[in-house]
Amino acid sequence: MAIARYPSFVLDCPDAEALATFYGSLLGWSVKSSDGWGEIRDEGGRQCICFQQVEHFTAPQWPGQDVPQQVHLDVMVEDLDAAEPEVIALGATKHEHQPGTSFRVFLDPAGHPFCLCVD
Image (cartoon, rainbow, N blue to C red; front, side, top):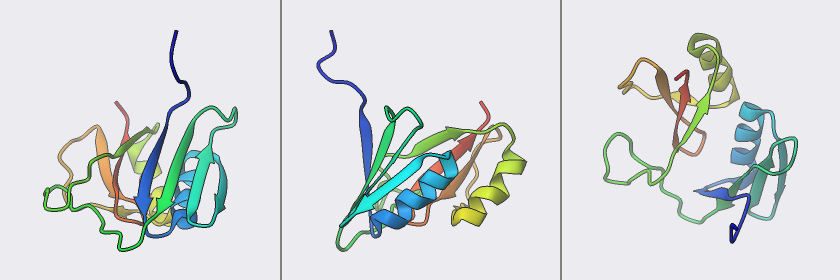
């Protein structure tokens, strides 16, 4: 029997509400935020990603490790070419370093790397 269930990841960021809104829009999940904390949940409410506002946030520097990313999100899409302009419209930026063909690396509005993947 599991000790715990329904894990959530918490990402540090400079603006919890803004980053929750970005990822909520990307995944089509509900967004809730208050006083330096944001969270998004799937329709069933079991999957959750949280965002914690921190003072003096420093964005990861990828692919270098001077400021390590420590964690990043991979999300599946049907078509990379179709999804790319949509995430850019939400506020993501495409990273200049693209090391693969079955995924694309972007930075969220707080500078965290995340990947759109087809495989």
